[in-house]
Length: 190
Image (cartoon, rainbow, N blue to C red; front, side):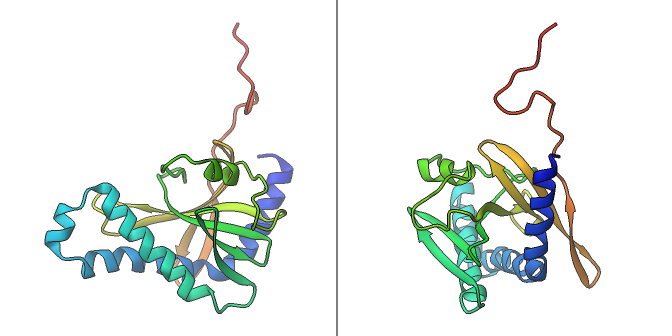
C-alpha cells in the first residue's frame, strides 16, 4: 500500500476506533430488528432488495439515534446520500457490502462522486469519504463482518475489518494487493 494511504488509514482508523463497538452493535441490532420485528410471513415475501432496504433503514436510523447527540457528529442527507459527518474529518456511509467491502447499489452521479472522493456541495471538502459496511450471512440472520473501505473510484485505496478480541475491539488491514500497473494503466503484454 502507498505510504500516503497507509498513514491515512492509521489516522482514520484511530479516529473511528473508540466507536467500533457502537457501530458494530448498531449493525447487528438492525439485522436483529429485521428478523424479530418483521413477521415471518412478511420476511418470506421479501425479495433480497426489500430485506436489504429494511436492514439498511434500521442501521441508518440506529446511527442517527446513537451519534446525533455526540459532539462532533452529525447525520446528514446530501444530494440523496445519507452520511455521518465525524468532525469534518470523516464522512461515512453505512452500506451493505460484500466480503471485500464493495457495495452494490443504484449507480448515481453522487455515489460515483462520493467514491471518487470528489467535492460534493454540503459535505466538508477535506473529509475522507468512507463506506463503513456490514457484510451479512446468506440468510441475513447476522452480520459476518464490518468493513471500513476507503474507495478511490472503483478501486480501493485501503480497507480494514473491525474485529472483536474478547472485550476489545480492534481493526485489521485487509487492503487487497494492487498490481504495479495500478488504476488506469494496463499490464504490458509480452
